Structure formats: structure tokens, C-alpha cells
Amino acid sequence: MQKKEMISMLLAGGQGSRLGILTKDVAKPAVMFGGKYRIIDFTLSNCINSGVDTVGVLTQYQPLRLNQHIGIGIPWDLDRKNGGVTILSPHVKGERGEWYSGTANAVYQNIHFIEQYDPEYVLILSGDHIYKMDYGTMLEYHKKTKSQGTIAVLEVPMEEAHRFGIMNTDAQDRIIEFDEKPQKPKNNLASMGIYIFNWDILKQALYEDQKCHENSDFGKHIIPYLLEQKAVLSAYRFQGYWKDVGTIESYWKANMELIEVVPDFNLHEEFWKIYTSSEHQSPQYVGEEGLVQTSILAEGCEIYGQVYHSIIGPGVVVGKGTIIRDSIIMGNTIIEENTIIERCIIAEECRVGSGVHMGMGECISNHLQPNIYHTGITVIGDGSTIPDGVEIGKNCVIAGETEVSHYPQQKLSSGDSLLMEGGRL
Image 1: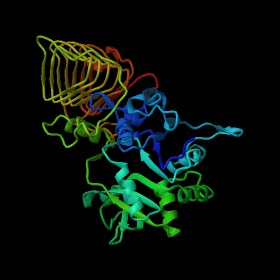
Image 2 (image 1 turned 90 degrees about the vertical axis):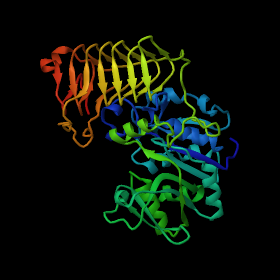
Image 3 (image 1 turned 180 degrees about the horizontal axis):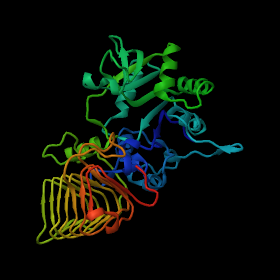
Image 4 (image 1 turned 30 degrees about the vertical axis):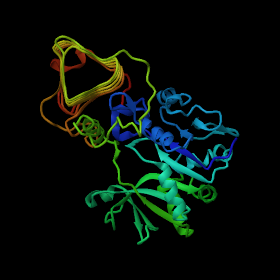
């Protein structure tokens, strides 16, 4: 293999449990976003826009849809003989297979992949954030500061700093201390989970830490180890848009922000395109009685009803007399006639019957998982079926093929769940 100055290891194996039913059968990086994209598209697009042409994607949890989406990397110009994109799943080593048990452990298990390119630098990324970043500029900063490790940081509101890994720095932005979710943070420089390391330094740290921690993690183990070893670590201050869409509310809000007249995050900039893998679809169609206001429509959708302030994915059909407000409808979902949907997230390949009222009633937190479903958003999982004429409240969760008999008095009250065929939250 041709030597590469820097290659990337993209961590995409997480479950994203705070997204509840949306990640029951799909890895978080493969969840649809913005009508036509998947969350991982933003990191992959950043790579090719930054000139990083060798990417190892480390998958584990529910990888099928993610693997199908990435394929050989054609949409991101990563289908290359020397480099390109490579899916790195856990595999049998010696006599047994071994799951990835931490972010750093996943990279440790793929040292042989990195070594074949003999890089000077390794870029560690996460596949579950929405942002645009030039990793080439970050590499220049890494070289300029003569650092052995550089960590991208974002200034967050001080009252939210306790939710993040916080980098405490000196006047030159050298990292002198790392606090993982501190109760009393000393500053507001939050780690973005984006690292550039000199490969020789990182390789040594991975080998040493593996002796102590089978679940080796960058935040919990590698960064503290490097600080103990007096490695030169610097903070790279990122100024742009960055969103962790790890909760139902943050995912919904980030999608809704795209609809604004002048969105903070622009999907249409010519100089920094967001690429995705998508089948060729017919154009959008709005019927004679159809009406669309302040919404995003993906290719191939057919609108015969009314859509307000919503995001409609590819191949979605909205029937006559149906009204959709403040909602996200993912790809190839069918909404029948005379249905009302308010503040809902409906995943891919669903079918919602006619005369359904969804997202109505009081805002009562979900009884099974109030920590996930509590902001009034009702969520329907992949491939689910909703029968005709039922009423569904707020903070409800539905998964699987449901029938009228599953709804007492044809109603699912706010905060209730309906999980069919072994479905789980």
C-alpha cells in the first residue's frame, strides 16, 4: 500500500440507546437525517472535503443498513484501490471472535489495518454528529503546535459543561487536565470526540492501555494515560455548527432547524457538499389538493394532503385530507387519507392508516422510559403499521405491526407504548 500522511478511523459501532426505538434495528450513524441523508454522511463528507481519502469505518451494533449505505464509498469518492473506505467489523482472531469493548479497543483491534498505510497521523472520528469541519486545517494546527495529540473542542454553555468531557488548558491551549463530566467544571471547553494523534504515540498508548483495560476508551483511558506520560496535547477550538443528535428531542430539533429560512446549518453550500448514497428517485409530486409550507421534501415523495413545517423523506406518500405538522417522516413510509400527525417521528418503511390522529392529548412522559420520551414527541419504529381510525397520544412509542384490537377503545393514551413481536424501547 502507498504510504499515507494521515488516515481516519471512524467509530460507527454505537447503539445510540438514547434515541430509543429509532435505533432498535439500526445503528445510530445509519438513522436518516434531513430528509435524504444518514447521520454518518456528514463525517464521511467532511473526510473527502478535507482531503482525507483513507477511512476505516468501525461497525458493530446492527451494521447491515450502515454497510449497505456505505458500500464501496462511491458517493463520497472513496472507492479507491489505494485507500478509500473500508468497513471494519469485529472478526475472529485466533480461536475466537472478540467484540469491540471500547472506542480505543476498537482501534487497537485494527492496528494491522492502520499499519499497512504507515501513516504519520491518525484521525479518530465519531459517526454520529452533525457538523462540517476541515480536518486538514486541524492537522495544520497539530503540526504548527508540535503536538503529539490534538483534541477538537467546542465552547458550550457553562451550565451544560457537566454533560461533557472537559479539557482544562493553559494560556497556549495545551491540555493540562481532562475531566470526564465534572460536577463542577473549571471551564467550558468540551471534547468533540475528534482527535489527531501522531501514530507512533497512539500505537504505544493503545498497547500499554490494553494491558490494563479490556474496554479501553479514548476519554476514560487513553487521554489520561497520555497526560500522565507528559505527552504534548493541544486543544483545537472549533467555531462552527456542531450537534450531538443523541436524544429524541435534540434529533427532532436539529431536523427542524434545517427548515428555517436561513438555517444555521446549510446543506446546500457548493464549496462543502454533503454527499449521500441514494437511489435514483422521481421528482417530488404535489397533487391538486396538496399544500406544502416551510418544509423539506426529498425526491420521490407524493403529497396529496397538507404538510407544514416538516421533513418528508424519499418515497413517502401523504394521502388526501391528511395533515402533517412539525414532524419527521422517513423514507418509503405511506400515510393514508384523512390522518392528522403532529410533532411525531415516523421511521422508515411504515404504514399509517386512514383517519388516524397521532400526537394528541396531554404531554405525559412515557411510562416505560420517561428519560427518553418526555418532550411530547411520539415515535414510530421502522417497518411499523398503524391501523385505521386510532388515536395516539404524546410521548407514545409504537413498534411492529399493530391492529385495532391492540388499542383499547381505539386509543393509545399519552405516555403508553405498544411494542409487538419482541419489540423493545
